Length: 302
Image (cartoon, rainbow, N blue to C red; front, side, top):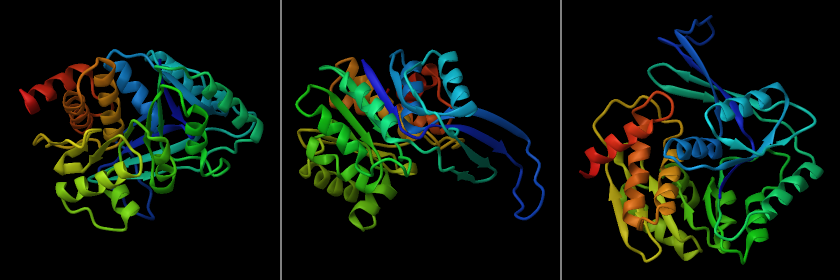
């Protein structure tokens, strides 16, 4: 079984504008709603690729109900903990010539509700995959991902962590199977500019020395690099297409790599599938379809 964990899911409200004028009334040309959050995005792409997963996390209020409804409508299984108070956050995505985001804070989570989550985590079994992705609410311990991996320590669970700085670094002693920092996150971790593929590989290997097994670094318009468990390095480029959407491209890469591993592909093939998923997401409005991903894969790798 594959589980994805989104501790602070959202109902994403995407607003399209011809242009945005600060301080004035702006009128949209189109709007969309979708269930959001990095772990949720991984579940959605996995479903598109033909793999079932269970989305875990917390939901609250009418927005939480809508998040769950939308996921069930597209065939994603959910097992969220319903919070007694508050509402799941609404994140605003403004799309003009550029993309801007306003991410909300999210509801408070009480100790007893966290305890219920840890009980669900305790049910994860040998052979399962657990993806922990995204930021955490301020009311949760800042070592929550570390706590989860500590609970699973010693089990044959494939763990994936996609998080920023200390959230990620604290998990490395537990040897996560995959981590996926982007250029900005890698720069923040090492307080250094990641200029190119060589820099990305250098710092990815340092993360491996701290415990990570496979490291994928997404580099936006310059593609991505990966260092696998044996130290072998792989690189990928990007297609020369119009970028329509950067939200969820990294999550799509995580889903692609997991899908490759679930099919017992080797690291190189799994990375190629991850790269194709990331490319396809960037060139699609919303999530990329399986057909689009397959087409992108053929264009990238023949």
